[in-house]
Image 1 (cartoon, rainbow, N blue to C red):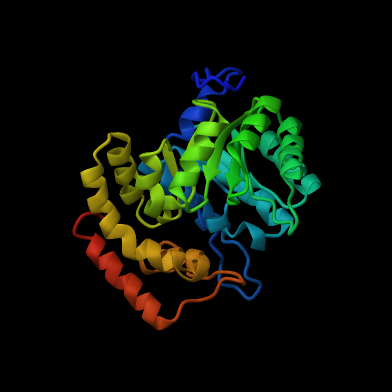
Image 2: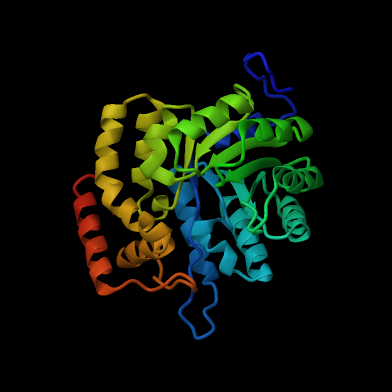
Length: 318
C-alpha cells in the first residue's frame, strides 16, 4: 500500500526484476524502413539493430515507442515489431512493449505482448482531446488488470496528472510499477514523485539525456533514450556517471550530446526521429527514411549532424 506518512514502500508481488530493469537506460529502438515504394519495415535490419543495443549492454528495450514511430505503424506491423524484438532480445534484457490508442486496442496489444513473452508494457499517454482525471485512471486500470502478470510503466506527458492519481492507480493495480515522466518541469516531477508515495514506483526520466541530470538529482534512476540507437556507449556512460553520483563527469558528456539532443527537441520535437535516423544513416546502420508526419531533413541539418558525429569520435568509437 502507498504510505501517507512518508515511509518507504516495500515492493511485493514478484516485480523486483521488472523494477530493476527500469533503473538504467531504457532504449526506444527505431523502426527501419526498407526504401521500397510501399515503405515497408526492413525486418532483418530491425532485428540486427535491436541485437546491437543488447550486445552493447542495454538492459531494457521498448518496441513501439515514439522513436519507433508507433503512431505510423499499422496494427500488424506493431505486432510484428513486438515479436521481432522479443526474438532478438530473448532473456538478455527486459522488453517493455509500447501499447496505446483506444482501450480495446491497447488491451489486445497488451495480451499479444504477454503471449509473445514480454516482461512489461509502457502505456502511451492517451491521445483523446478530452481527458479527465478519473478517465485517465480508468483507462490505465483496465489495461493493467487485463495483464496482471506484466509490469506496467505509465507514460506521463500531462502536467495535470498528479502524484495522488498515480499513487491511487498503484493501489488499484499492484503491477503498475514505473512511471516514464515526460513533463519538462523538474520541480513538478519532484512533487509528483513525492506525492505518489516514497519508493512505490521506479521513476524514469522520459525526456532522454538532455533532462536526465536534473531528474536524477530529484529521484529518477533511469532514462529513456533515442540517442542510444546511434552510439549506445554514450547513453550507457552517461547513466553510469549519474548513477554513481559523478555529476561533474556527467556534465561533460551532457555538453557533448547537447547539440544533438537540441536538434531533436527543436520546434516541439518535430524532427525528433528524423535526426536519430539521419545520424544512423550516416553511420551506415539503417536508412534515414521516416513516415509522415515526420520528414526528411534538409541538407543544412544533415551537415550539422555530420559535424556532431565527428566531434564524438574523439571520445567514443563509432
